[in-house]
Every structure is written in C-alpha cells, then in structure tokens.
Image (cartoon, rainbow, N blue to C red; front, side, top):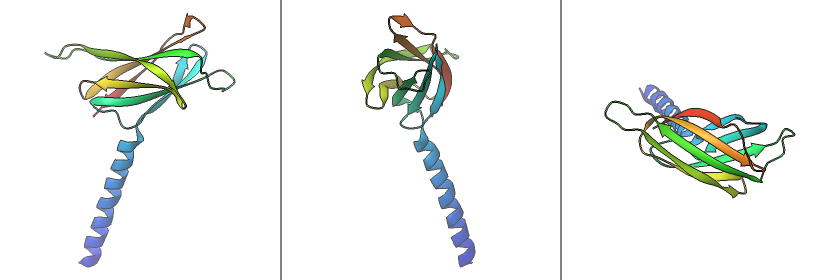
Length: 133
C-alpha cells in the first residue's frame, strides 16, 4: 500500500511540476517585420492583467538591432455582448531588447501585432495570436 501511495504522490508531483513549468515558460514567438527577424517573449504565460513583453530585433546577419521604435498592439474582437477590447504600448529599450507592458482586460484569445519603425520607415508588422489564461 505504501508503494502505491508513494508512486501516486510521485506522479502527482511530476504533473504539478510540469504544469508549473508550462505556466512559468511564457510565450516565445519568432517572425519578421520587413527584413528584420523579430522574437517576442513574455515573462510568464499570458493572463488577464499585466504582462511584460520583450521584443528582440535582429538584422539579416543576426546582429541585434537597437535603433528602432517598437510598439505592441493587442486586440480581442467583440463577442456576444462583450465590446471590442484593444490597447497598445510603446516598447522601451532595455538591455535585453525592447520591453513593453501589455495589459489584457480578459482571458481568452488575443490578436497581437508588433510594429517596428526604423530609419524613418514603418516596416510590415509581425502578427500572431495568444490565448490568455
């Protein structure tokens, strides 16, 4: 009986650990804005409320780009009686790239768009979707 309880406790611990790692891992999305490679990460799995977003830009040679203006947009389409929800944040330059705070009003599916302006030129945006908890 002790062996069965021990194995059950071990299995439950492993499941909880994996769930915790998934929650802590955040998102990691890579795409392009014009000729720049764009990597977007979050400090945690997106959830309603405050989410820290880091955007890293790289040129064709893989060198970090530090002379751009970056803005992160988020939008949830209207559903039923819920109105359209949207917002944006200008990303500030940091030691790890560009950081912005994305305040999501609700859990559910959100459309994300990263716009980059470099050398006075607005590049085609990078778009992706997330599911906030």
